[in-house]
Length: 413
Image (cartoon, rainbow, N blue to C red; front, side, top):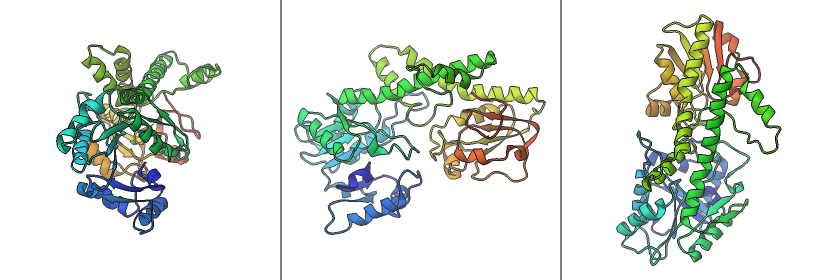
């Protein structure tokens, strides 16, 4: 978003992590979402005296004092009890408040429950700035919309929802995003409507994926190929093309808990939403159980048997490992006293170690044979792997999402 705005405006990017700031100042982005060449061009443009656009980065909040529009786009995860963790949003709001001035505009992009901007963000801005909401400063909400790893539907090519705390501010926010979002914008009638729209987008996907995950369990018991069933059903014009699989990441696997939290705060228990979450969170242990069954059937199961886990990011062809549900498979297989090796060419081993305390590798082990291989994430590189070389005789190959095209597998969802 910062790069998109920097094509037309002078933009400052702030992050509390000095490591992240230093990385971006060098034109590098470890998430691989930003084009390095374009990032360098925009940072160079910022320092040209005659430039009306460009991008710079800082870790000093007081360097934001000359800004008039602040966009808060921090993560909004859940805690171990699956309750909203708004600590980063609160911290960002306090930071912005330190340099907030009269007539400034604060726009939130973080995914939250309906009402959060005005119930949590605004009071912090008022308290730490000494200014009054909708008199001295104003707010907007425009939920983040991006498909990580997708190089076709980039941020400017995805329709954007906008909203503001007054009708005039709403138009200002809409015009701002409209100036860079080529796909167009949709002006919601209120901040709460925009917040609710965002959180139900991912909740809807979560529920639909839970449905096909349940179907995969049923059809497995009936010895029916789930993928073939979905292909056949997909010939009807209004059948929704959802696929079974692990539901991780910091959107679909998180956002439903925000809506559930808000619903329960007003006395309603969201049965369907939480049932879908329970189903999707159960898939890791289910897959592990299926792998072990196949190993027993093929007589390659024993304590200490070598198992290769291919992929630990939360989705294919992407480097983010946050809230990866592959760790559920790993944890369940470890309970069977199997010896696990994790291979992922996209994941940074240092981050896997930091987040999950697991060792991972970006290259395949040489000279090792595995009793079972679990292709947990469908990275495109995995279609180039010679599995026969990696497996013991009669070994198990389980392709979670059925993404392999060059071999026959023993199991898939």
